[in-house]
Image (cartoon, rainbow, N blue to C red; front, side):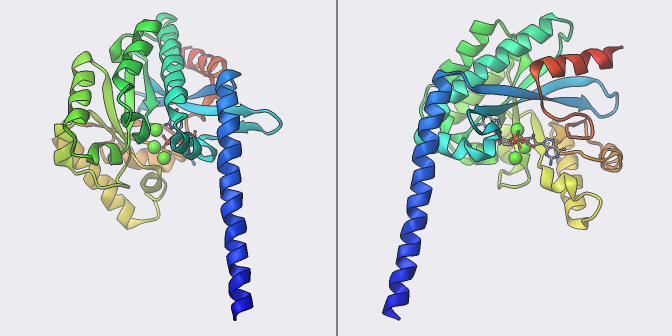
Length: 278
Ligand code: C2E
Ligand code: CA
Ligand code: CA
Ligand code: CA
């Protein structure tokens, strides 16, 4: 018994070491990636469900990791957050996304809105207001051209400073959306107080819309409540025409998903936009 206990401990220790190794190696590689500009943004269109017009794009972070290829954010965002690197990486994302949005708005899509994801950790260090302001100033993007996607965990903190920050952004004209809505615990009462103007219904509910009565009830309730509060709604992860039709019937405003387009590098998205205009 003692022997097997010791083996179990060794096994646990090996796993700990593996996790620590991954953290340290990824952290070093991310720091280097920042220096060497190995990050890029891909952009996924957001469409008005009724008219089919493109209303905006979401910026999604990618990492060109040498010897590995294109790495998706779920493989490194946690390390970026736990190491503090999310701050400079997030600042780069904001700046890059705002520059791209300003360029597209000037090039013939004047009402295009750029959605940028923010991590809760970026709110913890007190530089975020300045970082957002600098990204707008350096790019020349009008604040109306920027929307910040927050998670429910961010607005759940009953925090006066946070409320002040969001009020300030709202006052400037920056849009505020709650990402992955329905997976957390934010109440509708909170959303009003925190100046949120749009809810993004989480992909898990959207993809189950056809098959699961529970998901259908949740989506219907979210849409109805949002409408009665004057909040706009976007559904993410729309993969089929049947789901799009069902969402439209339920009164959803906007959609995003593989049915319309995958996230694409800037030149490809620009060609996609041009092809739609014709
Ligand atoms: P998210 O904000 O919920 O982004 C939506 C994710 O769903 C993206 O994954 C997108 O590529 C994917 N997606 C879009 N349409 C569909 C669809 O029809 N079907 C399916 N199955 N998936 C779809 P991605 O790009 O891998 O990003 C994963 C997550 O990483 C994001 O989830 C977001 O939480 C985070 N993330 C991405 N970029 C950033 C960033 O710049 N900063 C921060 N803090 N987080 C980011
Ligand atoms: Ca998002
Ligand atoms: Ca989401
Ligand atoms: Ca998500």
